[in-house]
Image (cartoon, rainbow, N blue to C red; front, side, top):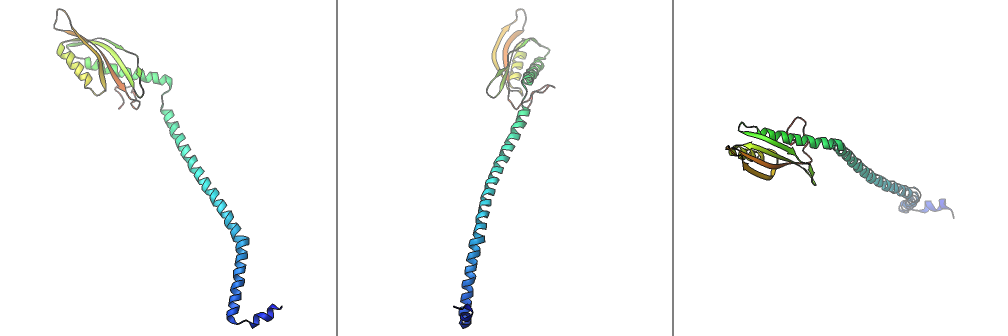
Length: 192
């Protein structure tokens, strides 16, 4: 069978059809031999890339979290510094009590700090103190103490009169609270 002899006998329409069939067959061979394997490799690379992108995002989140933890760890006081911070906070509180007790008709008799109590999310600083003076001044002192800037409370409050004068002596136990985000300052006052 001669192909050359057969093609000249075809009319134009049949030649176009034969060309299209041969072209389609060539396309199928190219597609099967090159395009489909290339697409399969591209799909595998894309899946691997998607996996790597997800892994990269996870690593980036972990590194960010690690950096934040390290920053917070640096901000934490060392054990020795924590005791020093308690001392500073307690001395600030004692200084405030002394300033409140300064009045011509009132005397600070005794002031004794108590051990620091550490609660779940804050610390409590207690002080036992005794003041003497006129009843009005003692009551004004207690009111100023309870209504001051610092969160302060009174655990015990006892008044007794001093014989032979119009003076009274008041013994009380007061406390204040320091939250973790309040940093005591060495210069006085408390951190807000």
